[in-house]
Amino acid sequence: MIKPIRPLHAALLFLCAGFSANVLAHNPMCECKAIDAEQIKCTGGFSDGSGAPGVTLDVIGYDETILVPGKLGADSTLTFKKPGAEFYVLFDAGPGHVVEIDQADIEAPGT
Image (cartoon, rainbow, N blue to C red; front, top):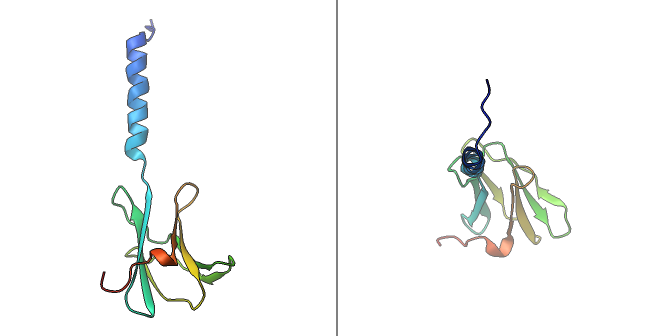
């Protein structure tokens, strides 16, 4: 005989399901720093501490042209030559996991 689920048990089951979804959630993170006047290094990953090797990281001009197409390396970084045109960096790990960094927000060397 199958026993019906009591309201309290149903509520606990629902709450536990909600907590487990939050535990598995991870937010994308990306940071870019100028190494010198010519080179920029970006590092990507997730808030749960995992890296992002192979994730797309493109450098895009303000006119939406891709200036530097790229993917993060095994160490979750990508170093590129600073474009002459205005740009932003797009870290794209899929729907809901996108980070944009404008050139004005890239840390200068030594900071």
